[in-house]
Image 1 (cartoon, rainbow, N blue to C red):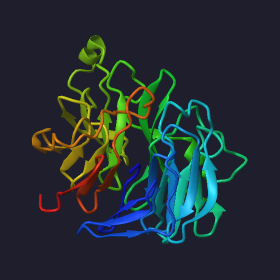
Image 2: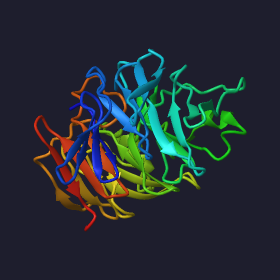
Image 3: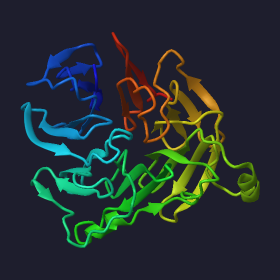
Length: 329
């Protein structure tokens, strides 16, 4: 098993499998299976489209899961592609269309395609993107903002987002990322991971890079991301509204309602956001030790799927899949 995605109350195993696994133990085969040299997949919420990709590669076919057909090959620039995670995501727009965000031509230029109309929404001769390596793209719940958790040359991870409501009339908005306070302050915490808590609230996690003691002392008790720790950012004001210290970097994250989050660094841990209190952990589930977008120097994580709306996640091992349901918490 190389990939795992939630679709309703099933888990879809696309890469090297082509199976749908029911949470009741049932399974059925899809019309096609796909090659093992891909190691990840994203599945559209409506379930028709999927993108298979190599996390540290350049190839990524767009497929129709319902028919098994490869619709078209996707790709990204090979400039440092072997170092950081392929930037791609799928979501449903307010009008009900399935949208694809990716970087098909340049590492620093996001394009958005409407897959239902086969139309690129962001083509423009006026595009002038900044020097930023996009990675781990994610739309907020209503599809009005797009998150990018990538990096710039130092190398240094930081988190940015853009407002999608004007993107058709003004594609250049994708070239001007809005960032959280302290994003470029390399003496303070590095912004290594992020997830949407809501349409307007972004949860940002630090790396394991320690802060410079003198600069941390100068920053004092200001509300900011600390290392290691989490910060809640109100994107309307581009302001940190909550800071949560942790004894470890959080890595990938899954919100569980407005006040709790599962962090996946090492193994899953359920954390209360108001004070960082550990509510529960699953030390028998290995979820890797990744923190940021640059991952060439670390072992890949096991296949995982997260479902924030359903408050559950799944982790695959060599012979089984563990599903953790937090809907009653």
